[in-house]
Length: 375
Image (tube, rainbow, N blue to C red; front, side, top):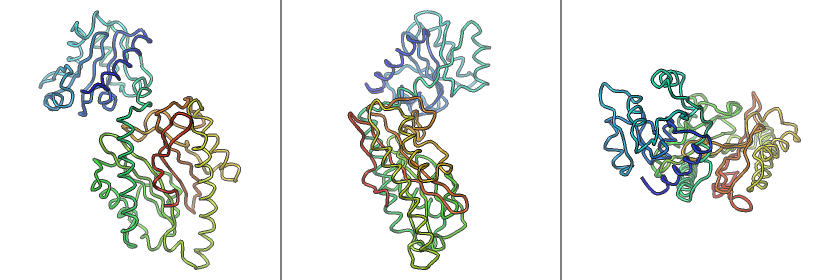
């Protein structure tokens, strides 16, 4: 457990005070890790008004000692349940100065089953849903998190450039995906941020296309790739769309295809650049989305951009915060979000350009700027 986890918990204590809660049960594994430094699963964190403790099981006993050596932990043995551990935590005065009456639970992560179990086991407690309280803390990155995301992005870029320069023309979408993910790990990534999206030609009209073994690169005119590496617990997320050798050839069919590709690419790039230029502290996330959306709509393709402009990234690829027509947030320094406008034409294909952007005082920094939108 490091000093930064202590600072995060202090910030969360202020949430308890604001909501007049006697404690909170954190069940989302990402949030447990964020507040403790422990990276296992199947574990909860009890946050009382006096202190905190992990509720875990014997599989993670030694791991907790390594990753969170100064944190108390109640360990579940065979025949006991995690909620029985919670009962012990509630009764321990070093965690709770009084018998809790109002306890916060994570609305997004608590299952209906767990909700009913809690009400049955603790009928005297009022359980109060917490709406993304830890996730909102995660929106603002500290220096260590920013560095980790920078490193994840660099791994992502290195693997992409290497794959693009070496992959054979007989490769299918699946082959390209597998090669890219292999190179992300070989380049130092601990994992991929998410299952990579690789789509050729008309399949690029599916924003989240699942790679298949249909066409080869040699038979395709364009490729869309959405990928990212995970390193030191943090992720990168990038998308590029580009023409293949066939798409760049001089046949009349390719020239026609290339003209359409170039038209759409410039429209998407214009929306991408305009949105990033407007990013700075104090600006509404909804307004950033509108800038890109209006640019695409004014070019006549508004009906073909159906998703939000971007999302927060951090420990997970779709972290809290983001740009959409319904976004309620305001940009603050040290937020990191994607900007990823796209145009998707059924039967033809789609183009998306995505970069990762850090909000800084007075503006923004494109963390993925080493990779040109045209790469």
